[in-house]
Each structure stands twice: as structure tokens, then as C-alpha cells.
Amino acid sequence: MAKLSTDELLDAFKEMTLIELSEFVKQFEDTFGVTAAAPVAVAAPAAGGAAGGDAAAAEEKDEFEVVLEAAGDKKINVIKEVRALTSLGLKEAKDLVEAAPKTILENATKDAADKAKEALEAAGATVTVK
Image (cartoon, rainbow, N blue to C red; front, side, top):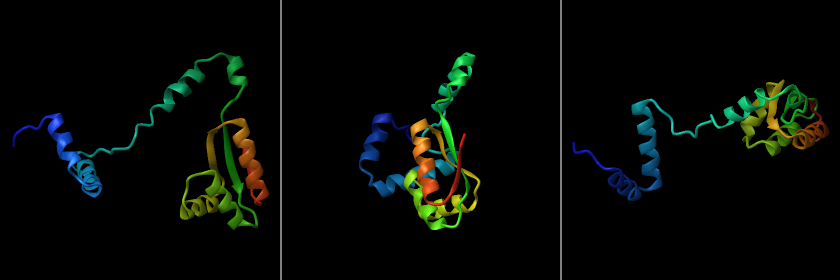
């Protein structure tokens, strides 16, 4: 088989429908054992930079976790709030609420964490911010 140049490959992809391209990506991932997901390593330098800081920087915490400790009596309202705070679907939010204690938000600002805690507590959940 003749080797295709990058431009030739791009021209071939331009002629494909989205469904055909999606099927190609799936087959490519299966064939080579890779995924086309975006790299998550972008967050690592930020964490590494904070770890290298002095003790004063460690005292001023700017990233918080919102942890759902218990759903309480009004589980449906808590599920609705979890869906509003995250991009989870109904099933994923329900599973997360039922598996409490679970982290709802990670690396949230103080304001976002406080607002999430208030919303979840208003819905009947027990929440901690770490």
C-alpha cells in the first residue's frame, strides 16, 4: 500500500461524514490500543507549582472539594442539585448520590464551593467542604 501524506489524509477525512469519521476513530483506537481523549496532564503543572510554594501559600487554600456525605430524606431534590452543579446525566447523578460519601466538585473556588454547599443543604443533603 502506498504511503499517504498528511494532506492526502486530511483530504480523505474532509470527504467523510461525521458518522464515518467517528467509526474510523473507534476502529483506530481499537487497532492501536489508544484513546482520542484530550490529555489531562494540563492540571499537573498547576498542582506541582503549588507544592513547590512556601508555607504561606499552603495556608491560603484556593481550591476546595465539595463532598456529599449523605443524601438525606429528599434524595430526588439532592439528585436535581447534583445535576445542576455538574454535567452528569440523571443515572450518573443518582448513582453518585446513592454512593455517598462522594466528592461532587473538585478544585472549586471558595465561592463556588460555598454556593454548592448551600444548594445541596437546602435540598436536604449533608455536605462538607474540604
